Amino acid sequence: MTAIRMVWSLLLLVLMQSGALCARRFRGGRNPQPRRAPPSPPYRADRGDTTESFPLDFTAVEENMDNFMTQVKNLAQSLYPCSAQKLDYDMKLNFLENTSVTCNDGSPAGYYLKESRGSRRWLIFLEGGWYCFNKENCDSRYETMRRLMSSSKWAQTKTGTGILSPLPEENPHWWNANMVFIPYCSSDVWSGATAKTEQSGYAFMGSLIIQEVVKDLLNKGLDNAKVLLLAGSSAGGTGVLLNVDHVAELLEGLGHTGIQVRGLSDSGWFLDNKQYHCTDCVDTVSCAPTETIKRGIKYWGGVVPERCRQAHQGEEWNCFFGYRVFPSIKSPVFVVQWLFDEAQLTVDNIQLTGQPVQEGQWRYIQNLGIELRNTLKDVPAMFAPACLAHEVITRNYWIDVQVKGTSLPRALHCWDRSLHDNRNNKAPPKGCPVHLIDSCPWPHCNPTCPTIRDQFTGQEMNVIQFLMHMGFDVQRMAQQQGMDPSKLLGMLSSGS
Image (tube, rainbow, N blue to C red):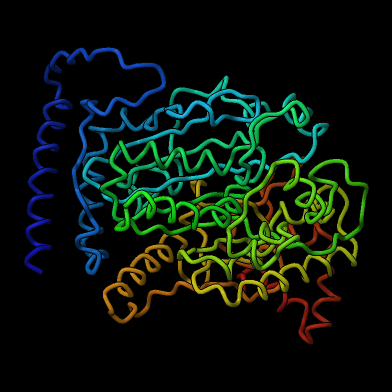
């Protein structure tokens, strides 16, 4: 407790001084002339930047973090007017030191960085964005989605949202971490390690890009890190499962054994299930998931975790599917997965716009939720709402979704605490769940699910409107459940 009081006193002193400075600026007084800094080299973050920061290491007081963070947030929020302008574009673009590791088209790969001096927590986020698996659909992707294959038009700065936000009210437990966003420009689910060739026409270096970013960050403070969270959404979420052990092994091999590497996989837990109806394999949307990965892993020269590769020799494509690769992962991983993932339904050829779904489609959707639950039952740390959506951790509504009364930021904080307590041989905290999965059977039966809008009118739909839009037969479903239709409607309205 003495250490906590000392840290708190120091924090209070720093914030009061900063608050006084802020007050002088905003009471109508004359602002001092800004100091002119020497121009920084293109696309490089200047470590000598004069930006104000709060050099705090919150890992020192994890045991009492709930009360501590409540007080910190209250003080920090009072200082927002002082720093709001600086938070508009807070992550700066850096290109890799190793110029041989590139995007698909040979342009330099890179990352966006916001340093939080004094913090020993780092968050590296892998962007998502599907993939391509042969020359033809990669050419098409290059014409229509060039940003995902080239760095030629990347912006110089990027604003963090969701778990990348520097605002405590949007990001309660990670706002003060060092934030890194790695744009997705390899089209290989972050698995490739192959240079550009005449035959392929493109480089596929997703796995190498992650490794080079980590190496570059060691010179920017990562060498002093206590925790490194490798996070990602969609293809980036799958990339976390494929690369989290590689990152841990890389750091260990470079002598940084004190850094705790963890993974956070959002909307990357795909199933290799049978499509609702099969179509010709033309692109990533029409192809069955297993077929695209089988073709892609050869085209990309894809790399999978060694233990998973040994378990599936000759069929390494299995390692791209969460429930198959997860048992081989040594690093702690938290899985976030919508039970009715829109991307999964898309590749399964279930269309939820236009005409109401048929009875066979409705059964298929319900069975998908059951299948996903079954694959997640042995995952110790996970958050799985019964919603129809895709991706969440970088959305501004990520703090609003709950499972059994617990929000996702709260569940992640509980996971952090449980890992800390396990390392210190302490009992896990009570009332702090980390295995959260909805039990209700329909898409959007959870009342905290993100808002659904009609694709054609743009109007919001409530749960009943959505289910009726999908062809949900209230009378028939009530009969099957052995209840009065009005009671069923009431349950749906309340999310029961």
